[in-house]
Amino acid sequence: MKQKIFFAALLLTFVGGAVCAQESESLKLSEKEIIKKGWNFGPLPVVGFDSDLGFQYGLCCDIFNYGDGSRYPQYDFKINMEASRYTKGSSVLRTYGEFKNLIPEGKLFFDVTYFSAPKFEFYGLNGMASPYMPGVAYQGIKQVDVPEGLKSAFYWMSRNQFRAVASMQKKITGALNWTAGLAYYDIRTSRINGDKLAGDDAVKRDWYNSQGTLFNQYCASKIIPAEEAAGGHVTQIKAGLTYDSRNHDSDPTRGANVELTFYAAPDFMDRTESYNHTNGGVLFMGSQYVPVVGDKLTLAYRLGAQYTLFGNVPFYFCNNMNSMFFRKMYTEGLGGNASVRGIHRNGVIGDGFVLLNTELRWRIVEFRFINQNWGVALNPFFDCGQVIQPHNLERQQMFKEPIYSGMNESLHYTAGCGFKLVMNHNMVISFEAAKALRENDGDGLWTNIGFNYLF
Image (tube, rainbow, N blue to C red):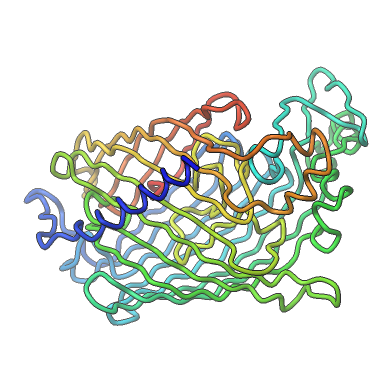
């Protein structure tokens, strides 16, 4: 009850603050700042790291067009292309774009991505209801010791995902806009493939192939029904409103950005006479950027919630955050670099959630280099969130460890700090580290090297 009051108070504070946040005076660019015009190309090697995924390597390219420069640092359009792999086995092929000159007083967004993850984390459902037992291993349903030099695969499964998303935004008045979008996901799930994970190492291959995983136990216990065990297709129709008074899209120092999106996912492809996963719900994401010391120090916070209004969400889509526009490559949570930093990726999932991210953004220094505008910033942060709408909890409660802990869901929280290198207010190279403050949410230090602020 206290947590519900806490989040309700935060929501009221946010709504009141957002209404007052729109300022008539826009940010004035420094006289020394270079005004970008026309095309700007940013080909880069992809070098990153994520505690959940490993080291990332590959190639990417950011393509900006600033037109005549009269709207700088706003751009007319941006396209990004990336091909990369992670040392823990995952790979990504992605292209996305944002066009602000095709729709008068609006924008168009698209994203086409293929993710391959032979080792995808699955820690169970409903947050604290799922016990976290580091190092545990099973062969069938028998618990066994992990041999020296090998790793437990108990919390692993395999998942491949293709997604195609198109969204648009059109001005109503002032900073208020209506939005609409379509999304399609093809998701394939299965137990781990020891041949892919072990390569030519016969000992590792035999060990992985002999292991029973939490995913296997969820399927055997029918918490994951047979119709969902191999994945499926999701088609979404979205509509909503946004309020956006930020001075920059990627590096805001003042203003607010509020999204209210209603979504429906009719089951066109996987339904049978006895099963379908038609569902719908609502997502709210609101962020505000409060200048503390001009544009040098900014208090930023984001309050979010997602709630299923009707139907059956398949287990493989419970972790999807159904935003209209994507800021991060991965749009999943709770946990990982897109939601509550420091918690296991996909560590807290259900049919509905709430989250809060707060951080101080301190722009330490600004400088010009190779005809570009650069800034360096620090962002200490605190994140929290929890499941507010469980998924198939009644079935989960019929079992004992390692499926059900006997605990009720409660708030998960983390703390950490980030370092940012910003180019032209539009490209942000990010390093972040965080620590989960509850044992069930992970041990060790979570780190991530990638792109963009979280919000």
